[in-house]
Every structure is written in structure tokens, then in C-alpha cells.
Amino acid sequence: MSRTTGAFYVMGGALGLVITAVAPGDEGNRPLVGSAAAVALLLGISLLGWGPRLPHSIHHGYVAIATILVTIAVYAFPNTVGAITLASFYVFVACDAALFFVWPMAMAHIAFAMAACLWVLPTRDGLPWWSGLIPAGVTFGVGVVVGILTRMASQADIDVLTGLLNRRGFDRALNTAIENATRSEEGLALVLVDLDRFQKVNDHLGHRAGDAVLQRVADTWGKLLAPDQRLARYGGDVFALLLPATTEQAAILLTEQLRAAVTTGCSAGVTSWQPGESGSLLVSRADVGLYRAKQAGRNRTVLESSRQLPLAVELREAIDRGALDVHYQPIVSLSEGGGKAVGVEALLRWSSSAQPDVTTEGLIRVAEEYDLISDLDELVLRRACADAARLQETFAQLDLTLNVNVSGLELAEAGYSDRVTDILNSTGWPADQLVLEVTESELAAESQTAIANLHTLRDRGVRIAIDDFGTGYSSLSRLATLPSDIIKVDQSFVAAIRSDSPAPPLLGVIAALSKSLDLQVIAEGVETEYQAAVLTELGFALAQGYHYSDSHPVADLISDLNQNQGRVGPGADADRNGWVPLG
Figure 1 (cartoon, rainbow, N blue to C red):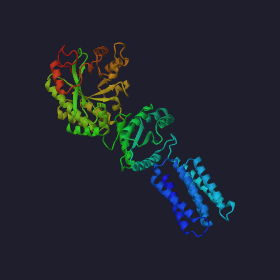
Figure 2: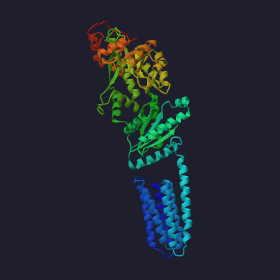
Figure 3: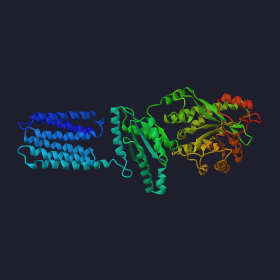
Figure 4: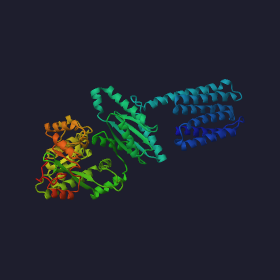
């Protein structure tokens, strides 16, 4: 709008000055016409320079002033022929209004220009009352035609189903936003959101149901966005969100709010624009984040940033130096009277100076977002296997099982199973004493590479545990098909065991089903003797939690186990008959 209106002003002002200087005649007021042309030229320059920063309403004033300046020039021009010629400038006004204003306002500006034309021309000596009909009619006709063509063209940028911008319209808006961000030096964020498993909606319920889902999502999200935040249906079930003057962290928070506002699961990739980057590069980076979100198990937001947070930089340095700690929490046998350690879970521990309050979950998220998870997973697994081998050497009678968590992004890498095998070979830790813990959502990743990796590892002797079972995508019916040997019941179920209420019924169902499927079950988060007793009564054989032991460095764990001969927790000084193997 600013460029077009400014160009009309500059063109009109320049032509006005030229024709005023060369036109013959002594009629009217030549200095007044020249002044009007000079004012038009200056206003045009101001619009080209500062127009994008001006409120939209200011442009109505510019268009109205243009009509007034043209009328002054027609009224005061030195000769009648030139005055009739200058009346053609009313067409500029009509075109500008029709291009950028809604129909009511556009027609108001066109009507004002027509009225001025019909009034000013007959005021010239020798011109009849009807002299303004033709230029006024042309002004009206051109304005209406331009308005119709403009609106037809704008509809090509709109998605018919949702009423949002389509891909073409979004790309145009993105390029404009980048130009504005370049001038204002403000931030700009981009989000790509994909509806998880949307194809199943179309396949099972039909395309009408799928269209209804898309419309509902578009309506819900549209109500949560500010006027300058542009939402588009980028293609199929993918939505794009353009966020001017927004940081990456603010974009992530808004994306989480949008995902929480709809019942349909969504995966999202977030990124931000850096000076000099093109729109296509920005979209490509957000698409990488979206891909990683789906590979990690869907229903999550992943940041694909072009710059690293201080925490990510510090984590990168810590990984390179090997300056991260791995602690170990014992897994105990409930069937042997409680307290006998049968394995350990490796847990990452690290204190950040950049963000001291970061949790382990937050640390893993940062590692995934900044492409550090592969090196972090390898460091933890290698350290854990080496420490477990040290435990094995210390206790000759120990048949230790080592549990290590794995990221869904790592599972989706084609060479992951070979990397695990290489680490086992280099550390000497037996494959049949390693348990890799993953969540079911990670096992359900869109890429089948994750499932293939787990099958390969199981063929090589490694066992697979489903962590946090009972939350997220967990489904009892899927246990028969997923490549798994162990399920770890989420600690929220164990926390619900209280002396004043019955145990959650699902715990008994899990215990019974695991026996029928020949799966071992580990109860996480055991904190009281009462919880341990209830779990034992329900048939659970294995548990871990603060009731038995917190996580410790390997040296402290060796000392503790040596002192109590393989038993931890309140009963550590009771029966000391050695270790019970997990498998």
C-alpha cells in the first residue's frame, strides 16, 4: 500500500511540476499548481520512506489529500486544455482506493473523486456543466474494474475450506514480514504444525469428517491469535503460523497453547528468522523441526533454531569434555522379601551454570532441539556400560542388569542399533544384560526405522522396556505387537496407592496381562512400605524408588552394595543372600 500510494504521489507530483513549467497560458494560478505538485512529490517520498510504519488508517488521509491536490491543480491550472488533462489523475485515486481498501471505503473515496471532478471542471471558463461526466465516469469505471480484479486475485491466496491463507498467500505474507523485520530489526518466528494421524480420519470416517476437523482446528486457533499473527493452511493437514516480533521461546509457548486447545494430536516445528535469510530457508528449517517432532513420537513441539541458547552451548562443551555425571538407582526384587538389588537404571546428572534450575527432562529437550542428543545418548550409554562393568568386576557373583533411557530421535536413526553394538563391544558389557528404556510414544514414531532398530537390538540380545507405561499413547492391546520385554509402570499409578483408598484397578490388570504376555513389570516411584506391600500382593516382582534408594554415583553404589551385600532400603541389614538376576 505504501509503495503503491507513494509511487502514485511521486508520479503525479513530478508530472505536475513538469507540465506546470512547460504549459502555456495565463489563466488560473501557476504558483498554486506548482505548490500542489511539490506537496504531492514530498508526500510521495515520505510514504516510500516511512509508510510501512504508519497505521492503516493514515492511508485514508493520504488518498483523500490526493483528491484535494488534483482538484486544486485542475482549478488553478494556467490553461483549460491542461486542466482537462490533469483530471485524468482522479483515476490514480480510484485505483489506489480500489486496490487497498474494503469496498465501502473504496467506493467512498471514488465517489469523493467523482464529485470533485464533476464540480471543478465546470468552474473553468468555457467548459459546460457536463464536461466532468467523462473523466468522472472513467474514474468510476476504472476503480470498479480494478477493485473486482484485485479481489479475484486475492481469493487465489485464500484456502476455500478454512478461509485461511493458502500456501501462496502465506509465502507472500512471509516475504512481506521479512521485509518489515529487516527494516524494523524485530524478531520473526515461524511455526509449522501437522495434525497427527490425520489420514486415518479420512480413511475411517471419510473426507467430510476430515474437512470438519480442519475447519474446527482453524476456527479454534484463529480465535487465539493476535491480528498481526497470520495462520495459513499450508497444505493438506499442515498449518503454518507467522509470528512477527516474536522470540523462539514465545513462539514455543504459543504453539503449546494452540496444541492444548484442540483434541487432535499435533506435531510442530518452530524456528526464527535471522537477518539475510530467505523465506524458503525459514520454512525449510521449520519443516526440519516438524520432521524431528514426528520422528520423536509425534504430539510435541521441536525447536529448530539457527542460534543456540547459552544452555545448549554449555551442554555442547560439557559433552565434548565428558563433564556429565551418570548416577544409578537400584531396581529391587519384591518377590525375594524386598530390598534385593537386581539391576540399576542409569540417570543423567548435570548442573548448568547458565540455567541452574533445568531439569533432566528439560536438558533432554534442549539436546533434542539443538541436535546434541546423539552425542549425549552415546556418552551416557558408554559411561553406564563402563560403570556397570566395574560393578560386575567388584561383585563376582553379580548378574547385573543395566537400564538406560534412549531418545526417540536416536531410535529413528538408521545406524542406531549398530552404534549400540559398537559400544557394547568396546566396553565389554554383555548385550543380554542391557535394557534400553523407551516410551510407547517413541515406539509409535511415524518412521518404521525406530521399530526396525528395536527388533535388531532384541535379535542381538538387548532387551527393551516400555517406560512410563500408562500415560500418553499407552495401550494394553499394543503390548502384544510392540518389540518389548519389560514394562515400567508410571509412578503416578504407584503414587495413587494410599492406605485410605483401594489400589488403582489398572495395576492389577497390568500385572495379570504382563503374566499372560510373558513380560516383566517394574513399578516406578515406590516411596513407602505400604506401596511396596500392595505391589507385592498384586503380583509385581520388581520395583524402584526412594523407598529403597536414591540415585548414586557408581563409587557410592559400590560401597553401599558391598556393605549390605546387595540389599538396599529399609531391609538392607536383614537377609543377605546375595543378588537375584533380573532375567
